[in-house]
Image 1 (cartoon, helix red, strand yellow):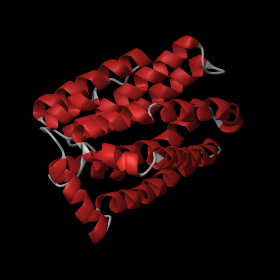
Image 2 (cartoon, rainbow, N blue to C red):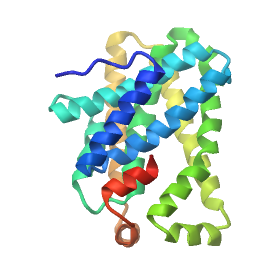
Image 3 (cartoon, rainbow, N blue to C red):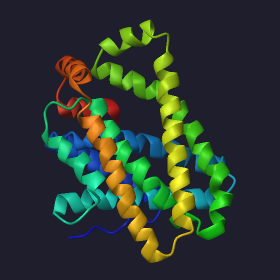
Length: 251
């Protein structure tokens, strides 16, 4: 049975809480992304309440449209209904033991940022109105970058060697993470500009093409080659605790 879409950011937070609890109880790695996503959503909500954005009502609407794409994909997957290729791949990964936590997070972010974000932004601001959204859209980058240290600390609690690597790298990993996030969101913004100017039929064709392209990124994340794959296996063997504990750490 299809679940009703969230109507406001509070309902988004509650739905994410339920998913985190469901997946934690089931011991499913699907909960890794849900836990991190809930943390980010709480921070966006805080900024909306503070009046951080130029148009806070519109940003809540965008947040809800964006989140509903994930929530609907999650429900569709659980109920055996059709969903995008990129989300199906991300959810299917939960059945594989060898993926590290970071790969699960990247697969979720790949589907949600590289596919869903541009679609949701185009829904929030149609046609030429999309241009007025740009400043607030970019303010989200600042919020995400502000959370990098917190997320890294959570990942280090799961894989302690990360602390040593962070020290040896002189924190260049944070700069790379911020750079990668900005690049992904820049691509999402270009997708939003493109989709906002399409008619309904052309929009669906473009979304289908984009979904295929995003799936190619998922293949790269899941199969990074022999050397990187071997390194990931060592990370996986060094991760501490059960799936339940990892979800709790990320929450």
